[in-house]
Image 1 (tube, helix red, strand yellow):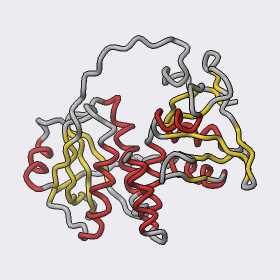
Image 2 (cartoon, helix red, strand yellow):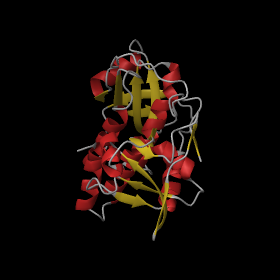
Image 3 (cartoon, one colour):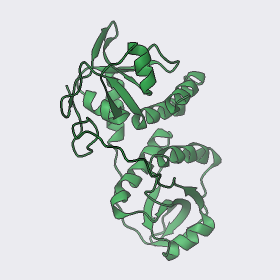
Length: 265
């Protein structure tokens, strides 16, 4: 089963559970999906097939290449894109997204308004603030909150191999008397900081704890605060980078250049 399969099955078992539904959207946003195209891509332009149904128009995508091939029963043009990118480019088009139709138990239709909601949710960004910590201590989060938050962090961090060595979840007291919780990343490069902070925001939202608040800071292993947090905080490991085999990719392959996102027509 794929991560999307498991999230879909969990939602089916608890259809009234908002957390299960949010987890499904989270898997969709992070998944690499294979979108069925009308024709082979031309440069950076891709043209998804649009299927007309009684419920509206839909573009079809599959979370495994083999599932797309099973649906088409033969070779077919496709583009591999993150779910969040597909949702972004379908916003305002009045077109929904069909996932794994006819080839898996996780088949579902997402109407245009669901894609609008997902894209809007993914635009949430961290707010910068300043403060002077006076003490760090063990986290004092309720067990139910930890039960929702830790798996959400684990899922997000699984896509961020090598961006930091650890994340430390602890309590914090500030000079102005405010108390709260902090997630400190160790050894993150400055260029990785925005992506890590955004991952924390998404973990909060898709865990159902959008109203919660966690301060995110970045430390080096030599910082005194890092030593204190290593003793008192919950330590969350990030995956180590994996060296992939060298692949030669055609410059025109859609979605391969992050500075030139594919154009969906």
